[in-house]
Amino acid sequence: MQFVEAHGAKIPAIGLGTGELSGHACARIVEQALRMGYRHIDTAQVYNNERDVGEGIRNAHLRRSELFVVTKVWTTHFAPNDLLRSTKESLHKMRLSELDLLLLHWPNPQVPLAETLGGLAHAQELGMTRHIGVSNFTAALLKQAVAASPAPLVCNQVEYHPFLDQTNVRATCADLGIAMVAYSPIAKGQAKQNEVLARIGATHGKTAAQVCLRWLVQQNVPAIPRSSRIERLSQNIDVFDFELSAAEMQQIFTLHHPEGRLVHSATEPEWD
Image (cartoon, rainbow, N blue to C red; front, top):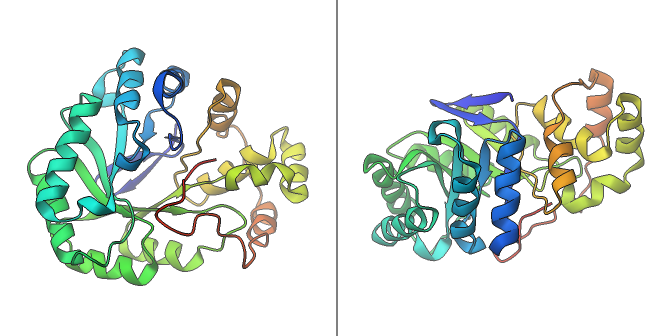
């Protein structure tokens, strides 16, 4: 496994997204992913599966220090006291003493950003999480967040795949020393139908989805594909034994288009 470092955090380059997974199936997928070598597990309060994710983690019987566990605070819990209370609930559901990374799931203009970031930093001070960050922040809002945060933000988790141009956000993250983490990295399965990705994959003996993930890895962008199928889990993590050429990387960069965004609001699921 490769890692992306930001402000003291070491984020595994490939993780498991768990949006829309629940119950025994979710616990089983998390357990199997960890047994295959995944160490980065991403969930969120709004997914309503933190308890199941925690069960999968326990069933894998790994040392806690080996894992990088992420959850995201939902927008209705952004008032500082609500943020702390909901984070305690998340920890209780997962039966963890601390998180590795706690994120604000989406911007919420109804609560002053400085107050929410203060609550997020307070959660870190109290030992609820080792690191903090944000999700779905634009480049401009990310700059505001960094300026207002009492503690370093280590990542901005956003939708990113070959069909969506995130050049501005990626450059801003790089300028600020923040990792950009990609959800929906396979574009909700659309990558599998793309001829360019399939052709590049055939050259390397890989699938189009694996090419997407490798494209992200080579940009130092951790990716958290979601899968409910065991065989897909093994494919998604098998992207460290080949390298895309500069020409292939550029071909993939040209695939973005104006209608590339798939997740438009806080009410839409994030998955692959």
